[in-house]
Amino acid sequence: MDLGLQGRVALVTGASRGLGHAIAAALAAEGAHVAITARDRDRAIAAAGAFGGIGFAHDSADLERIPALVAEVEDRLGPLDILVTNTGGPPGGADPLEFTREQWQAAYETLVLAPVTFVRAALPGMRSRRWGRILNIGSTSLREPIANLMLSNAHRASAVTAFKTIAGQVAADGVTLNTLLPGRIATDRLHELYGSPQAAAAAAQVEVPAQRLGRPEEFAAAAAFLCSEQAAYVTGTTLTVDGGMTHAA
Image (cartoon, rainbow, N blue to C red; front, side, top):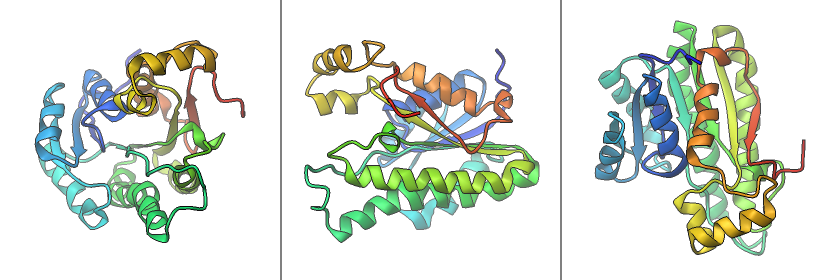
């Protein structure tokens, strides 16, 4: 299937590795011109070079720089057609009430304010050109909260409802906003959480109906579709990619 992404300009945040990098590579493979961000400039440039993209240094907590960053991407590549907001999760903890006010605020800024600020910067141009795809990367904890991830559970849910609210306002302008929810995907972060790739794979055999971890490329394929020409009528929704693990509808 031709996804209609040839020549489109995309920005994927937090994409030096893991799910973000897989998404960026998938968009580039479809012919899009792709920019990525990472905290470290050299890492961003090296990661983008793997698929012919360009890299920018950006810390997701730096809200003030976001408009300038979007302007820089457009200056280098042209008007932005696709925005993928992806960021790592805040710290976990066994007691959901143990987190400080500062930790709550930091998580809110990273998982809610940062994506919304990116949307505010990119949306006017997309609306004026009557074409745009905006995708936020969430977590299946939106559907079934994970016990030790209180901050992520709370704030990723807020980001979904924010995106859905905006989606309804701009649907008639040819711009879509959706959220993609990863389950157990074989990334470095997941391997670190389990202690090793082998431990993560063993747990998936028992806990995931598909009896395996998902591959980043499988997740990225779903992202590429939601960013495509063919997905023009899909907006304000969440899509789970988890091998059947989530029980909630």
